[in-house]
Image 1 (tube, helix red, strand yellow):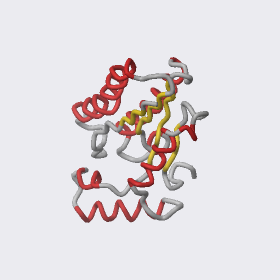
Image 2: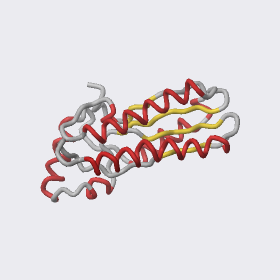
Image 3: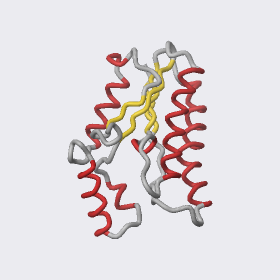
Image 4: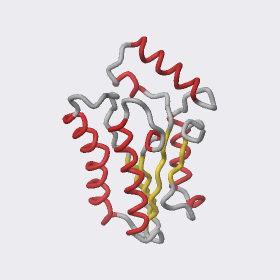
Length: 169
């Protein structure tokens, strides 16, 4: 059973409405257009029983100040999984989404924020998480392995919110 996991993602520097055309285009080109055409090219390679796992984000359902563009791209990823599930028989290929919450990775250092702002951001996020900690890449990998396995054979078109409860309350 072929398994494809697509984690195309542009680092998001949260921004306001001013002077964002390039930012907007870059976000949508990477997170939506890039994903769409990558999956389109991969479809002929998929065999019966394939599993395609897309990477979205909790921000697809939870509003955050300055994150409207990034959030919209991740909501589009979720929508693509729903549409592809309707268009392509699940008996051939299952499409699912993992929507992580805050995960401990180096991506935060690429957001262009000073260290003290990153520390304040992290502390604020931890306080807002019911689980009171960031998730780990290993935890996300376990979710992906489950979605790729036969144990999830009846799951298709789903969005697994692996978010420490952030988007659930």
